[in-house]
Length: 244
Image (cartoon, helix red, strand yellow):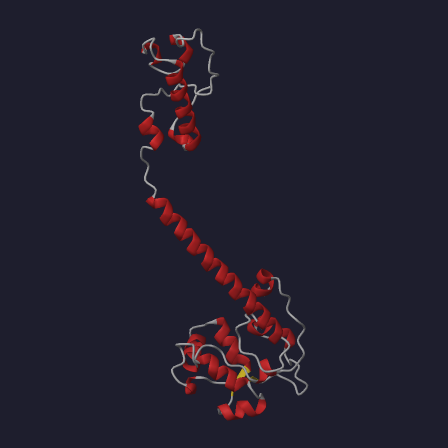
């Protein structure tokens, strides 16, 4: 079975150095009595584990065989609710391990042996070849975890900000309520026909402008067009539709 951490994090597993500590000082993350019950219920891992692993009589006996494993395991167990006391932790050694730290049942070894180490969070003995791999995997794992948490926080902030934006009339809507949605404010300003003012049709396209009195002079008309232009440039486009 491919190692999930190796595949997802892109950190290849190193070659085993045959230290033998994983076979000499194994301690599953499940207390002995719970593991025994799982084996009785047909759990593959539990049945395979008890088929080859033999418990040590004490922690001291295990520590004498694999120095450093007991101390590391007891420290790691403090963070797990399954273990209520150090006495709940049992250490095991493989009955089929040879004197030169090789596997005596290599072709028939259980799946959990084939998968080891299936996670960088397993307790390893000092000097194990997989220690640097586990350290690199945990570093990258926590970096990804922090990045995911940051992105989730950012997403929540964006959703909160979006929910506070309520649609409503803009300043452009209020100030140009007299203006038709068909207004062409980008039409060129026609030249004046005489010195007294523009003809009524010189402001074509501005709805209602045809009813303005002739006294509505060029200066007033230009002021109106410029004010509309300023409003258009300062407003958000969705607030008004302009047809060319």
